[in-house]
Image 1 (tube, one colour):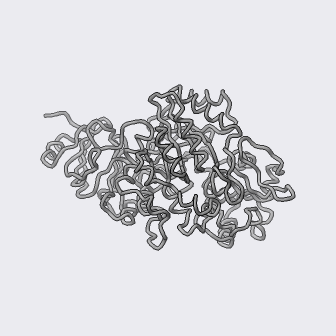
Image 2: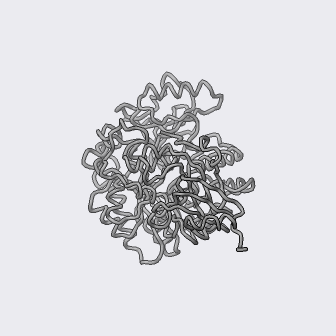
Image 3: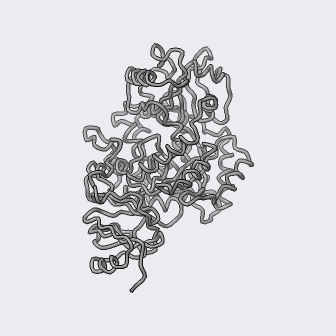
Length: 546
């Protein structure tokens, strides 16, 4: 008898090879690798050799999905308290905060996901809390994670006066008299208050990460790229979770380097490369060229309509270029946050000027760029990573949102040019930036095609010409992801890593909104079945966030 294999999965719809053409047959798995993709006439033979057989019928087997940009441990610190996502008025936000405060006995009241549109055209300030949270210590993270709003009592507890200077272009917001408004822009300014916030316990961090990764797996993810190592105990958390059992998805961890980093900081990150557990590994580095358009901290060629977004995050952007070169010369891939047109152009030029080697560098976000900068990105050889739901959830086609109003019509029409980047030959990986947006890949794959939120046909699409095809959207989570980090992967073929996701419906032929609801029947990570809902498909996870 021929040698046994670990697993055989039978399906009439396998998206095999680079073509992703649906074929019937069987995928045989052994030792964490796909050993064969057989046709219908080979099914019985592989069934006979398999230690475990799963027949998914006419459900569709896809290469396993990978989120290119997540913050699973830091996100637990950001997503504290009441979720304010989607609340567009002062009254709605105040009501949600008051209701949450009535249910907590904690010393601090937390919220997250606050959209600047909720200030209804007024300058953001902690006056938002007046009359509902008087005297309370309040810390609310804005939806993009790059700014926070803190109550007067919270600022007092942290001894923030408004006169503080922080590294890079982050700053403490002040009014005309120099008094702090409660707005803290960028991580360096937020840290002035975060350092006095009550810490989540170590066990809570472990439990929350376990729960999150299991939810991600249930949504079809097999892996994600964690673009920070901001919580000092992150690796300890991962080791503690693996002491309980395997992580539900694999994590590729790229620690970030922030403005003010020293040579010692760079060498520390170099030394971390290759540290690993069973399903996590430190690989690569995250850099940050600018902040965000919504908070006026992006780097634009011309100022925004508030006269802001004129500076890079680094006081001397050449220091970021030196860091990029430092990692490039050591063969360490980077992913650089660059949102504004000037930031993207600067990073693309820096990458193009590196001495060629096999190291791949990626640009994150790319929210608005003109044609000439798009061409420069492609010519530089940089790969890209974009988040379709940042556009679909937070920007409006009528330009009535904060992001569009800050940019003005001309630049707002250059929003998240995923379609143009793909047509120009760029690698375009997709992801969520969780907790900045929901992580469910089905909703993101749908939004990449519709340029609006899943299930919301009433919402006008934002720049629909930038829509991706169903195939390009799926590739953004599979083969394009792996290309974006300079590695082979994201295909179902012999010899490939056995990362597989099985959906009730075919993502290439199902209407985007319907696919967003498609149950995940099977998630396989390195050949191990992590999610199996084949016996009870009605219990399989639907899209968690519309």
